[in-house]
Image 1 (cartoon, rainbow, N blue to C red):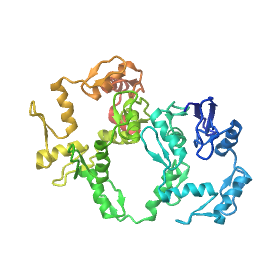
Image 2 (cartoon, rainbow, N blue to C red; image 1 turned 180 degrees about the vertical axis):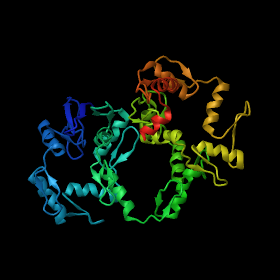
Image 3 (cartoon, one colour; image 1 turned 120 degrees about the vertical axis):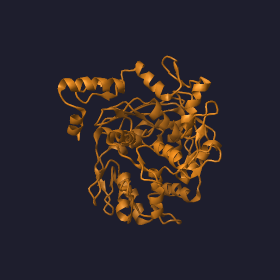
Image 4 (cartoon, rainbow, N blue to C red; image 1 turned 180 degrees about the horizontal axis):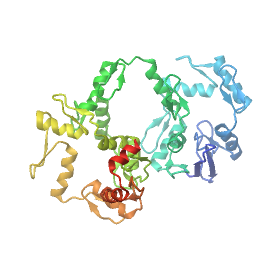
Length: 440
């Protein structure tokens, strides 16, 4: 399947689409034999003629002038409104759950959720789908196709809803407000999920982070975040998890073939979501979250929250045997091993050095084997640790993530900005404490 698509978010309308239909770009429609080479990049619906596609595009960015008098839903045309009224009239009603649909085609598609029918199969990984549009979106994972581009940071996406969610990072728009507590959200589904917290009672509260839960079992499961307890062990590789669901998901890695290859390195993954997360964390250079204390930039708010503990000294991980608490989970694990003899050490067979975490032993073994698995894509230099490669790669880029809080100058390396800040703050006549106090 071949087509050329350029899609952009302009900030006003949802997309500006340019489509070049190629003569051999024909995808058979499930109900007839007509070629449909014109693709809508918002919902993946296909059309036989370009003018039909242009009419259809109005559904995504056109003005909705026709309002349903029963539910206040708005539509672009009178014909769309008339079809919608079938929902209220019950003309096309599901005999299984009572849901009313707008037409017979929508009803037949809905019935698949009861029958479990998934007639559309991916030719690459054999995953099946109930909707043809879902298969079309899924196939972009294998081809690496991302037709939706952000005008502000050039990040690209495979789905329209992903760029819509991403834009809130730049605009800060949170137009969906909670009527109970006035908390605002960028997406309606986030607000819907938040409202469930108000509807259910939450009598169980965590004493360490003030998070509340509706059931004591949920609180007990949450406490493993602070204690570091991981009772579920993998029988294949001995990796441990805090939740049974996480173990079950991990076990699939041992049983499933790795079909999703990273185009930027030699790593492969069993799930497309894992591949996307790898690309974002390892290969993506953009970072939009900056630390108020030191100016360091991060790719996600979660990474920033973890980093801020360095400055605040927050200790979220508490020992259940004594009063000691720790900033990081691996610190708690070492404490449990040394002070309470709980857990298992990972020992190097060559030098007998012990490690609290298996990944640390894995990295250490590279020293004995002289293995350097991390290769620079620019100059082919090899490194034993990913952190060493990450530091080296700054040689090939102008990306400077460390900012001097006194003068605003940016630097590539943390140790460089620390040395600069001491000199800069001395010349300007204030200390780091003065700067932190003014930023809070």
